[in-house]
Image: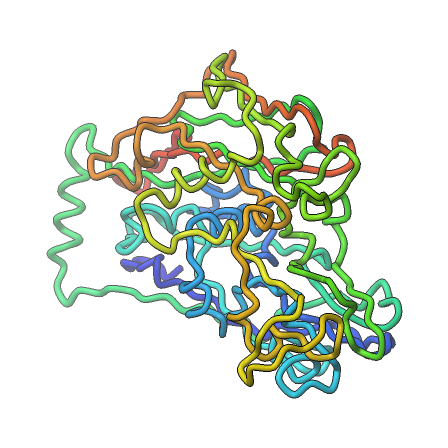
Length: 447
């Protein structure tokens, strides 16, 4: 960030040209642009060369997507589609010759055709109430470092197999923009210097700090998270094949019938039963998952207090944390249907034909059902603070659970019909960190 300036961290914006590095020899191949935040493995903030935020979250893109779907509505997604933040779905796949989608789709890229992407949310210090007026004269040099994921964030379709390097990608022409505030006189600097010159004086800055880990599904998963105020616990299941690019087999460029909703496996938060089947594949659909239960144990306390809780009720905890009392503020039950449905002209194409309803009218193919939550958006988030994190509290109150003690233990118990020892889970804990900034750029952080 600019030195000796007041920087608005909330205005920070990265833009780049996304493209694939290599030409593909696959027949009728289309390679899609991933969500830009999914491309990030980590986003770390450093002051004067010392990392202060982000180091404990090495699954940044997936954790961000967990939170995004839990606390942003469909209207927000539609207003930001030009930034490729919307999750690619099956209805946006189509024939190679299609003018609106397929090879003519601006969600597709190649080794010669780049697509502009924009990224503006990096968590960490950006969540501080001081972020709009971050003074680098007080904090010292402020640096954001982004580390990137690989081919696992990508998705494509073709008649035959892709080569191993077909999903190698890069960002070109990367630019960062940020607003700064300047004063024509030195009064502000004099006031801040005078304040910090007082004995024991310090500027206290709270911000959200996330710890994450990935573990193989099992009946009991230990989670190491140390925070003076742990404000929320989250987890979501991931398919066993989430570590590679997602590919769809087509016939003459046409996807198969019955794809339903599809997202890259990297961010498909999907529950599967003990046989590895999706809830939608069972006759009872979502109710087939009743015997799959979860509960957290935190410092000897069981959460929820009732103990084993069905995954069917997981979304209610997530909504209570992120969307209680708000309108249009989650996408947990939203999906898309590739089955026959009315289109703008009023005709009904047969399922499995070259024309998919979502290819012509994305809105008409939307579905809202509990099974969409289990198949694609199975995020469970539980509040462990009194109300909101310190950075969002008017009084800056720490009200979460203290897990800094040596005897502190946290574990996730999964009982019943889970695809144990095959699928994995992302576990995340959001805590409140407090940064103390003193005179002479003396900085300390208690997590």
